[in-house]
Image (tube, rainbow, N blue to C red):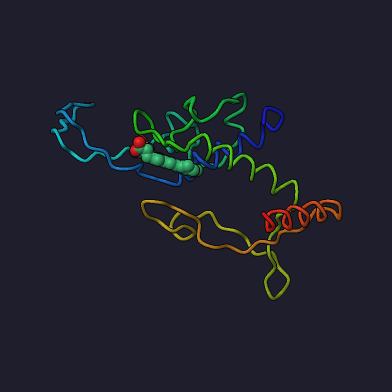
Amino acid sequence: MPDLQYVNQIVKEVMRWRPVITLGIPHANTAANSYDGYYIPKDSIVYGNIWNMHHDSSHYKNADDFVPERYDGFTKSAFDRDHYVFGWGRRICAGMHLAERSVLSVAASVPWAFDIVPAKDAQGRDINVSADLASAYHHGVVGSPKPFPVQFKVRSEKRRRVIEASFKNAQST
Ligand code: HEM
């Protein structure tokens, strides 16, 4: 991954721009507390608003835009706090290192194998993919994009052979 810095930046920006768990997992405070002028009674249910933190323009310039370049020079894992997609504190995601490495591995391998290009409509025109928040996503505790059409084109015959051999190998184990 140190040699694939831009892939690393794309993964960080996807996790920041469209966090999977938008409100984190609910927690309860074991003692009364005050924060930023708010009194939080003991045993309150508290959500960490990951979405809001990730779209705070005082922290991330032009926070609604997808800009992997904002992570120029950020080479470390998410544990070093360049975003909050895995939560924080004592209950931080227990699988974050596995999750981050898995996503990086897929994000590096898929573009090696395929060009991902727009699908065509019946008239042969490109179908644009929307990232519109109101219409293009399933919303809930876990957010995810609705299905969208694209074409995966294998980038070369040599790559096709590697993909098919890997597929055969995966099926046999
Ligand atoms: C991109 C993938 C993932 C994301 C975005 C994610 C995100 C999160 C978040 C936001 C929390 C709540 C943290 C908090 O309460 O402050 C969490 C908790 C947790 N995650 Fe993940 N997670 C991912 C993948 C995984 C994987 C692969 C595993 C297991 C191998 C895992 C295991 C857990 C566990 C066990 C907790 C509960 C930890 C606790 O409450 O002490 N997660 N995750």
